[in-house]
Length: 277
Image 1: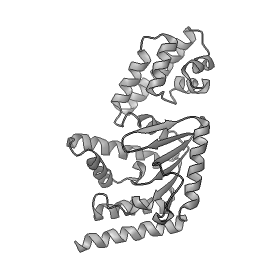
Image 2 (image 1 turned 135 degrees about the vertical axis):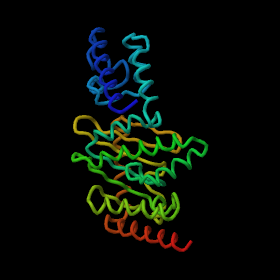
Image 3 (image 1 turned 90 degrees about the horizontal axis):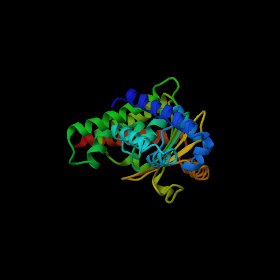
Image 4 (image 1 turned 180 degrees about the vertical axis):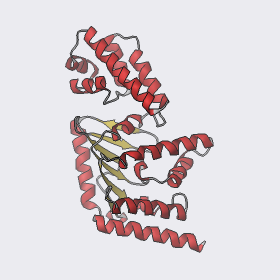
């Protein structure tokens, strides 16, 4: 299902939710209490701005006695998305975020990956899938990057662990081009990248990848991910802790100037390695 079509269905989801909620005589706050989210979130669902997670859709069906219609619609949209079920909502939120802060401990973030790099990462994680599957994953990852080329692109901050800079994903030549790509975006002032050196040792986000998203008209969220699953965090107290962890990572990282120098030096190292083989 194309993105435009999915957006239309989410709009229908929101309109139907409002219709059924009002028919049940419930305010947004009252429905929110029954499904364990705020009334403001119910309003965002009805506007099609936010997409409810599957468990929330299930609770909405129970609260409104709608015979599973919201769960089925949500499942259909998740299945139609090119992203993993735990990431589809994050991809939608990136498109409306005003600020994105990301920590990448092992792999270059998807928003910065070249096609070569994205392909190598996809094949490494899925060695037995078809070429069509790989192409779909790579294409969807590159499509996400359109938000950085838009005039209203979000403010984008990235902390890269040095491990993500030094690992020769896709081979030395491909990795050199990946680092050149990051350096070019930095020089164009599309984002701020700092590198957390290996010598730092323990750091504030030892658990894995972390992404923070801020919006103009809704509360901030945090997203954490491991190799096999991801979790979107809405609880204000948890998001605040995640923001503090990110602040500590930025303090421990190299300056932007030193980080750019390290990235460009690593690219040269990869080029020399490729030319010597």
